[in-house]
Structure formats: C-alpha cells, structure tokens
Image (cartoon, rainbow, N blue to C red; front, side, top):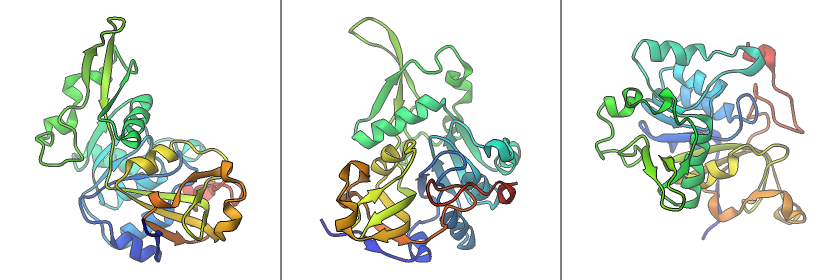
Length: 266
C-alpha cells in the first residue's frame, strides 16, 4: 500500500461529492474538523448524509448552510455555549432534513461494528423506549431503506432472541460512511496518526469509513512519532489523505494546542 497523499484543504474537500455520507472526529466541542466544515460550505456541498456518534457545532453549521439531507446520530449541541443546535432543529421542524435518532450507545456500537467489518452489534440500549418505536423510523418512512443506497441499512434495528440465555436484544446495523474527516494533533510524514488527550470514538469512526481524511495541526517526522508507538492511534495504511493546517479545529478545542473558543461558538 502507498503512503497517504498530502493535499490542501480545498483539494481534500473537493473529493467529497454531493450525497456522500460522512462522519467526523471529536466529541461535542472538542477536536471537530471545523476548517473542513467551512470549506464544504464554501464549495456548496449538497444532500450530505451525516452519520455520527454525536453532533456539535460542525453538523449545526452544515445544516444551517443547507448542506445536509440526512442526519443520523443521538445528540447535537454546543455544551456550555448553547445547548440546542438551532440550525439543525429548524431544518428538522421545516421538513428540510431527515433526522434518524438512535441512543448514544447504539450509535457507538454501530461504529464498532463498522470498524470491525461486521454487519451489526447487539445491545440492550434503549429497550422499552420510543427510540425503538417503528413510527420513528424516519428513513423507512421516507422510503430510503429500499436497498438503493448501500449506506442506508434495510432496517433501523432488529429485535433478536439470542440462544445462549434466551434474552431479547437489539441488533443495530453497522455504520460505514463514505468518508471520515478527522482533526488530530499530529501525523507522521508517512501517515501515522497521533491523538493526544481523550480519543472519544475516533478510532472506530476512522476505521469504519471507506476513506479517511486526516487534518493535522502539524506533520512531524515519522521517526519521531514512532518513538512512542503506544501514543499512536491509526497506522498509515488506513489514511488516504493528509492536510496540515494549524488551528483547523477552531472554534472547537484541541487538547494541548488550544481551548474551545466559547465566545466564537456563541
């Protein structure tokens, strides 16, 4: 396998086509690839399908700009700096955006399955709640579970009685988006990815996607980053494109580099 290709931010974003499905690094207001989000808005991307463990300023901005057609996640907001994702909420209420809701654990397990190349994961999460009400299968109600889009499972979930103990569990389908755009602290010159601080569901998101764009605060010599392999998260052969761009996560925070800019988010 060849090394990942180093490109500019604009070049990386041009690879994303209207209608593609995407996931992102980070958690709420931490280590989101905000420069890429703004570049997608500049380039006028349309009909994007976002599949995420949770949302934040990034998906709210894309929604407000009219870039998003489908949103699959469990939550979105800005933590202390405005808990409600106003743009996303307005688009859903206006019927301009399809919102497919899962529980937090269900979304995490969907990415675990996708990262491992297996079709589903079992969980007890959200059993007994309206999360599993067939009336709220919004992609199904829109007629989009017909098999025409390989990124949309034929079922939102399935109830299953397992044979070991006779318990009923929920099977949630794997999430395998077209793209993951990840913002990280550093990447080696050959593509080894290092994330400092909390890693959230980044490993699962990066491994589940078909293609991975890594936007790094800095590119460092590969010899340097491999001195401490225990701190590295993703090997070079899983990375497709690298962008070196300091402050690419602003206004979200990047541990050991800069804090979240709450005033900007507000």
